[in-house]
Length: 163
Image (cartoon, rainbow, N blue to C red; front, side, top):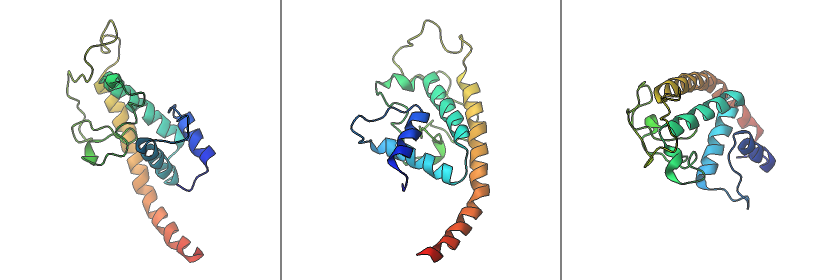
């Protein structure tokens, strides 16, 4: 990714992603890093990416994806390529419907049982509300990427003279 290892480790730290003890990361870790580096290259502010990251993780927790047993449950879908329009931007989780939709399958529960005494909705958390916030930020970031794309193309053409 043409970035120093220290920079990449700091990205993991700032996004609260567990570091591999032997500095050998899974393909999902690398796909996540690639996404963040690409978006940063396209001038998307890291604080906006972290906000989206936390919203996506919260949505996945409300859908009980976090109870799948994997310590990196929020990264496990990174790098997968099927159904790209149904995937969240950073976690790359397939929601099962196209992202312009503002709905989520009610009652969707990927866990065998709730770990809390009360359901999330009764505690004031609502998957549809979190999805709406996530989609709003997702669309804003996508609009910024589209706006930045012509500049990146021009810069790439300009940089070719430095062979």
